[in-house]
Amino acid sequence: MCRPKTLQVSLSDLAQMIDHSLLHPTMTDDEVLAGLQICKKYNVKTACIKPYHIPFARKALEDTPSILLCPVIGFPHGNSTLEVKTFEARRAVEEGGKEIDMVVNIGRVKSGKWEFVRHEIETVNRTVVERGAVLKVIFENDYLTDEEIIKLCEICSSIPVAFIKTSTGYGFTKLPSGDYNYAGATTRHLELMRKHTSENIQIKAAGGVRTLDDLLRVRALGVTRVGATATEAILEEANRRGIGEVRGEVVVPPFGDE
Image 1 (cartoon, one colour):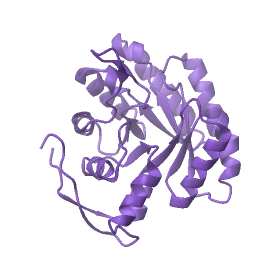
Image 2 (spheres, one colour):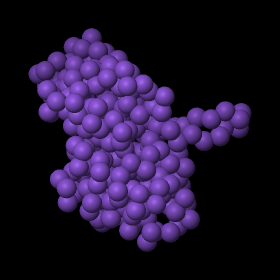
Image 3 (tube, helix red, strand yellow):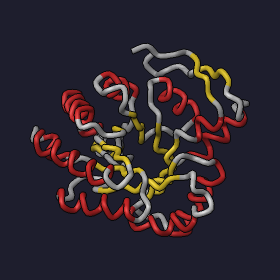
């Protein structure tokens, strides 16, 4: 895959790549409200929220209709039944969600039960699209082989869905040390996903996009959306580097494998 050395971007271009993530299980309502103020300050694309916060976020953002609500369903492990995921998706859209992030049934992916996986994605996608929203399908790449990622790309391309997404940010795996961590959106996986997905399907990188350099690198790989908690730090760094409202040339930072 060709990696461009420069990009033409503005501050708004970068802000509109961001789904500001407000998903940590311990977040209080006050912390979510503070996060929604960050969404408004920087005019990001969406606020990514837990389902019970949809009415709360809708009220907080009622004076900023350009910022969409992006609820998650089947989150973070994808283990809900199809009936529950369908209900969650329908309710999320009816309450104001415009983009729905759904975790696939990871166990069924690992089992190779591809007809089940396809049926689940098709059903939830239809539920969402019929009500005027779009679906992002979360793979949780840390748990998957390359072959499983490619198969999911092919299924999502054939349906088709609006977005495929690398990770939840909570897909922890046990390390040899006994500690738990996750890789999230890696360069190798993003290139693999772009190679095996239809051009009309967008890719969302989540987990590990914490700096402006991270954001520029994934954009250079063809990513159009990211999930981020470090939104303020990323966009303030863009300001410091002179990225403004007029689109201009920005150098893509080196990749770790170069």
